[in-house]
Length: 171
View (cartoon, rainbow, N blue to C red):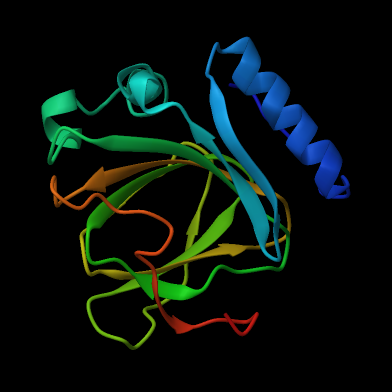
């Protein structure tokens, strides 16, 4: 999926281009949210988790990705100079691959934010359950492939499984 987006694109145009690229790759988007103050996301049908993993995480086998039998693929879109909350999750680990734009990422095993890592397209990062993390848009639109690795098969993670330690938007 080739997404070299100019920095000055309107949010709606960025989402249109990503939607078109996902359609071209035959990924079924079951939810699209461009209302987030930091950008938004696309949720891909979970039945396509293996195809999504093969496309964006070819260096990992499904045995390395799957913690339980449930995986949730997404595309995150972070706007320039915006950042997601400093957060962690009780019921999921996450893997990310940067698809477009240089993004900032902070991680830590404590509530104190770690150092800023600048990640270029092609870079892979993994966060364990409970690991604090934050995705940051730098000078350009950041596009990130993400897989939620659900850790509790009886109670899969969802959008409510976000513990925000700090949030620029008061959530």
